[in-house]
Image (tube, rainbow, N blue to C red; front, side):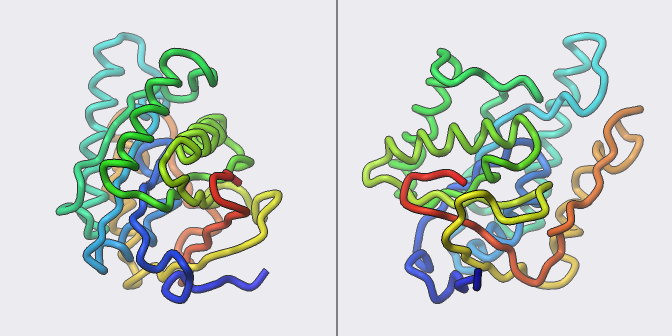
Length: 230
């Protein structure tokens, strides 16, 4: 499908919320959108679903708490490098990494209410989240949560899926909106804030590899219809 430039689309003046499954997905998935909106003076509300502490083995709660705090700090630094440091403070929902809450559970329902309340507070009418078929349990969980929150917003928000680890457009996509990624190297500079994922800073554990779509001239966001998560 031929991408429609965001700047020529019905959402060119929208207020956005970005739901990132983990600290680092704000850059990998939606960094171009966050930087673009910050440059327009309309910074997005960014929400992080999980605490990111599953990237390394944590044999004690105190170690997991330290890693989660480190990942929060890295996320804030990455947002600053994307130009969004003066925007709304990021929100951390602190779900356990790689152990998403079940839809309908008390924790899931609390998160949905909080997202819907943020949409009302910020006047959000467009949401960006990882696509529902992106191959990670937390990415799929984020899409389901955002879909439900978008439906509860008044009016319902338009939901867009970004592809992080997948290699094809999401199933059911009918429209693609493209967003300029900004100055060359900006995304890489923002991603380098996540030192715990790129270096031995936090000890042996996960090492981040950049996905196939990272660094394109324009970010692609996919949608079907209002309130539908791809």
